Image (cartoon, rainbow over all chains, first blue to last red):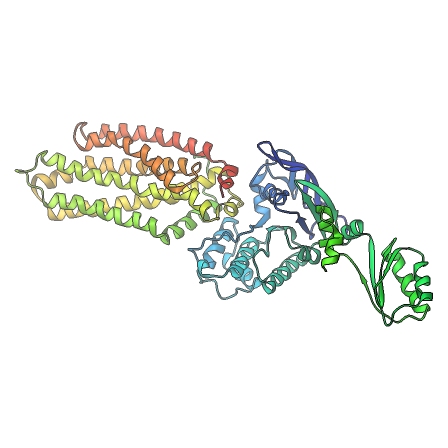
Length: 317
Length: 244
């Protein structure tokens, strides 16, 4: 991703509630079109960060800026630029889908609200259902309406708090697809999520927070590599003989190896550099290579950061 | 409020509020049943008036009827005002609502207008029905007293101010209280004693002259302006969402 002027900037933003420091000074810069994930357990400061950017709470110290507008001194300007989807759909249940969206479109001064509402509902798969009362919809459909509401005025910045919370797997996948489509159109997305696999698939970069402190920042791949090293699982057509084992254990870049049946797991100094050489050496030694799979994922990295032993995850798997 | 432009977001908020009130059973009951009761009672009073058996005479009878009409713009907004902010919080809609491009002043102004406007319209409506019935269906002393111009003068002058008073008092509690019933009870505690001056006028303890109405109106303007400032000062976005 090209470096561009950040859409969202946090400069030493912290937030206290009484004596409790909910968010320690946080610096972030989120670029246009980026999907940025905030990960962390409950109480880690994710929602606090989102609320600061949504102008709902003020930072105790530091400054948060959206498209050049400070969230405290230019809050109304910021509100024009953001679309917010809270964790709960937070819709007017007595009103119809259309009336919910019409309120938002009118409040943002959308010139042709009818067209904008139809487009937003079409986008979330609710085309033609605008007359239905929100109170009669399932949780999944309400989430879709909440997303439609957040995008009806086509904001350049979307703040999503657990967008797939409580959704069944197929609805969650549909939500992911919608977020990806929005970013393809240039929208910048900042999202909180507990779903690490979702974050790994969706987010260009993630920040991992623990007890209000930033403990990890980067692409999901960078975080995995940094925390878990460069691990590889290799499956062979038949168990390795002593000669093959010796050849592989002495290969450059291989820092550890564990043989398991007709294959092995190894630790490399640099997976990008060493994997092709290792595979070449295997093929050169006459081995049938069935699969080469990088090991470890964002979830393992996350648990590592949270203090849970990764080995236990491996064992459980 | 003079610097407040009726911006697009405020108009949108007012329209949303009115749509929501129409679908809120409790609010509709308050806004429909109470005015009907406040219309029927004075009409019964008119129809059954008997100068020979009436204890207070015609002026007291008309004054009692007028008290119902003065109560209408006070009672109707009370529930709506208490609901306005706490209701949003209880149904989980306050947080996204506060991310709309509305300043605190615009947010409260939209909420206040959406309550005051229907309360005033309903109050005017039932009073016009009452005077129409009095015009057509009564005669003599009771007709003259009912249609005496000082009553509509006072009523049309004070009704918007009374509705504003009730709304702003309810709103001041709604932005701070954590429960709708608490806000309703607290605003009731403020509203009912404040009806005492009106009670003195309608019972003829203070003559219902134009100067009396003007004095009451001036007092209400001051009270409403003070309550507006108090509500604006009491409104704190963080506090409003923190109880959710």
